[in-house]
Image (cartoon, rainbow, N blue to C red; front, side, top):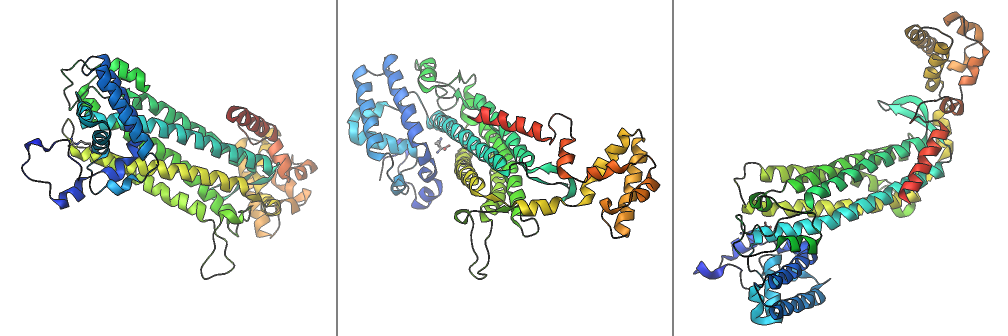
Length: 459
Ligand code: ARG
């Protein structure tokens, strides 16, 4: 069994049940790389400040490099029953490789400031990866929008047909949301990238610890202004999970749209066989499980946000062991997010659009009711009068079992005398989208501009 970092005042060994209950290596093994980096910076700092000698520092650094080589990519899980946490693991491995000098590494610090320093270093990397994978999904969506080549679908409100929109416009709506998600994560880095170590257990250290050097060495932008905040606050993790939750809220909506589009009721999209699943009973089935898993996992991520908030609420300052529960949810969220973004990008990129189904869906005269309303407004009919007129025409057509375009000009003129034969030009999805004038509208030229903008930005 590995030696603890704190055995001195204890007469008995820890009960195996408590070991099982409290040990955290199974989770904090994720910190392996970050912890080695923090340890290396710490060893250099200890020599620069003459707390240890240059030779001792070199011996420690050599030992750390060997640990990295020996254990990197190895299954650290085999130590989880024996070793309390990542800090204890590296300490005991260092003692094996560097001998007595290893006992000087932990000088001037506590696991309280160490663990949160490693967590911040680790999270910084994870945020970079998540932002990168988000960009890849954005690119896949832009490519899918290009592939849709001007296809027009009924835009929906209340999941009922509303007005024609370019499918590309709908897809780019998600690219927009994901851009905001990346920006939120980038902003979170400002709160993540603050150096806590030097805070020791809670009060700071009486040794000449050089935090400026450590910050520079480890790439931190700032040094914690308050040692008690530094060791006991996980606001940065709550913020990370909140921003991740918003990202997942968007991923879940995207998933829901694809699930609908993939249903027989819509039939807009066919998934590649490599990104669909079958049924163990019904031989004909080809299901969109990718999207359902995304929608379901969004719920799990929201749960992790709830956990990090609830774990911290009511904790007296400063460090409490409750804070060890900050990591499982955060790491799980990172893993789920990274793989979900990757699989979504691949699924979207490999899907094929079913133009016929879209054309059929958009051949519905009621989709042009708003175009007729705006036509009347251009003929100086007051808006609410025009609204009521078109509403009556829609009802009349429905009651007579006709489409709006099947009403005769005489029938139309009964609703509004100013209506001319040009009203029949309006029953065309292409004309409808081309009629749009506002910034951000679904006009094909504006959508083209959006597409070019994203292509440039994401290159
Ligand atoms: N494993 C702990 C955590 O993740 C760090 C160790 C601090 N332990 C302690 N008893 N002060 O928060």
